[in-house]
Image (cartoon, rainbow, N blue to C red; front, side):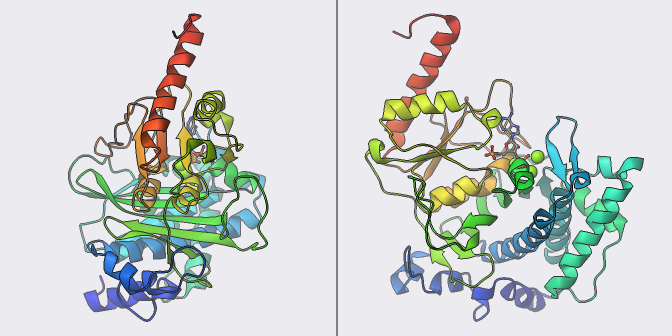
Length: 404
Ligand SMILES: Nc1ncnc2c1ncn2[C@@H]1O[C@H](COP(=O)(O)O)[C@@H](OP(=O)(O)O)[C@H]1O
Ligand SMILES: [Mg+2]
Ligand SMILES: [Mg+2]
Ligand SMILES: [Mg+2]
């Protein structure tokens, strides 16, 4: 394990914008031409530095994993994707990303303090027919580490990779610190060549206290609600947030400076664009259309895969996020932990269909009432009321009776 000084130096080099300072402030100190510039007042507004090193470490791990995913997405081949027992897809990049993030965190955190709740497990890779895939994953992980250059001549064995992936099996719970990882959120989007996110959150005593979202395909320019394309074609965003310190967005390649981002302040629901899953199987698009109708929203839904939606909303591209899984689906904490703090630290609110905050203290699953909603404080009551009306209408329609 490295001495603290060496660890700090490593973390400083983890994010290009932060090279000149060891402080999380440095991210905010960078000039921000388009959204909100963090001048002296803005920096002064960032009071809590409690998770500063955790955020830097998370950014390093997520950036590395994102590079591995980008390399795979560029030349995705069919035999690098498998179907899991629940028929959802998993690729070499999901496993490679989880192995990298887990390995980096274990390496950098004080001994005995690292606990990880992550989506993937190593069972299929340990099976006889998983050996080719494991070989490929190990190769990808080692290529990514070598290209990064900050880990010396480290080479991971197949066993190291399996161990790193398996470390994500922590059950979580109400006390202690847990890192929460979705190595690729939106695998279907990833395989389609669309949006996905590497999502890493940190829980402290059951609450999300920090989160980083790597969104390699998300445009740096805002997504216009009317679908109009921006002249700025650059893609690749990293969103980072920690409790009390706000949310910042930076370009993934480090070419643009970090900027504080904020949710939209639109307070007229008719003007509020909403976002939802691209996959109709993940959220009831009929129900969300009815919620939008009740709210008077006229813009078409912005449909994107993964927690990239939370990032896009945190910078004001959409004002409302609606997610209503079909009956029987249980939400997992890694699908929302990082996204939640990215939104709340940008000034937004995330709650379920009963208006309750999401509870991350119950282990690997979220137990919630019917769906997940995010919006700004001005629209919270109107959106919640519309959600509850639309759900009542849906239930009545199913029973074949009028809601009145
Ligand atoms: N039937 C279902 N209903 C709701 N969510 C589902 C689902 N099947 C899969 N998911 C989750 O939806 C996530 C993608 O979210 P989105 O729809 O916002 O893109 C998936 O994450 P993974 O891709 O990490 O497995 C998966 O956890
Ligand atoms: Mg999955
Ligand atoms: Mg996911
Ligand atoms: Mg995933």
